[in-house]
Figure 1 (cartoon, rainbow, N blue to C red):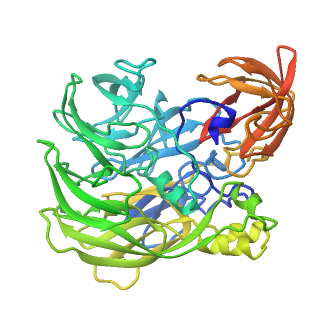
Figure 2 (spheres, rainbow, N blue to C red; figure 1 turned 135 degrees about the vertical axis):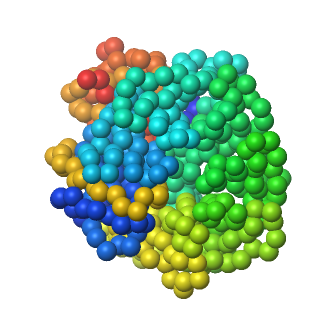
Length: 540
């Protein structure tokens, strides 16, 4: 749909039900000593939380200023958080807080030590790559993209920096090259979009390992596609093209990922392959249908992967009164799956079922120890679509929407233990105890209306804004694309950097949020965002 409003590359859209607001999780007001397994995650309100997967205590919010991230609700966030990484010994949690009101978002690197409030280490951390701990845990590494491509339209030079965990001046470690591009459209199953969202670079499964001799990194920063090893001079020693959702083993010797066997991303069956990080040699472990997530046992001897079996599908009835309000105007469907988590030796052999669970699929898998596994899981969209097809109210549809939940289980157990709150991007600490210090909660900003299937609006009537870098924006006579509405005509093009005054809006239509603006005396309607990318940004 982005083509009709603006021509530019962008991220794959993460389209969620956006009319109802997410309720913050209940969290502690004081200090709590959490016993292993300690989990850190991003809550439904966009803040960073600490809890124990034993689920015997309330969570502690390490941050309090997200109050509805742009990924989850219609709030204008002060912050949105991601890139959660525990130190090797598990006593410190590093993460990045982004300012969503800039394009691209600028980030601040924080570290939260046990028994201490988070402290900032570095400003202006890049948003298209993760952070990583050094092999000794003394430093935290991050990468910044060059302003211009180096070899062709999509290849960029990244400079890899490191900052001491106790704070101090960052140092330059080395460089490497990586592609930066991506484009996508909404998926029929909104649960699929949650799966994709969890596997994007802001998730913790991004393959980035800091080894003694160099860096293991994806070939594409946006899609987490491909795998390569580059030394600190930028020389690439090996690469694998057709691998995705890669996860590094706990001993940092291997990586596991899923591979399209025929190069077709629409295939049903996937190969699960293991890569030797020293040589780049890949080994086929097994093949299975609808593999979403991969992971490791704690001793790095076995691979874990999820395989989904589609049971039934129900199309969304777009004629029902609240279907478009809840799901947007893109055709949707609800799908039920039976999902099985499997275990197989890295050398290959017979795969054994570990856990079966109904829903859409596992989003992330991580080992607590050799007998316990932690995971995040995406629920099925079937109930939400079924509710919409019965004519249910939006809040009733929203109540049964697919969510991302976190939990753990012991090998051989019949049922997993689940957290009672929504938990995204969970990561497990290696520490026996972590003391969480509750953050003060900022006052919630005024909610701004959001159109279904779009990013939360950031423009304000009476204020000025500008077009973000890239292609120009159309300025139309109506809040609709001329290619889809014969009553709408293009008046002008607003170039990148073009400044305008917002005089009316927002108006929802054709999958976009429209604002009436005055650009150099020409008054018309222009779209704010599409495909998960903002095309307009407010000026201070």
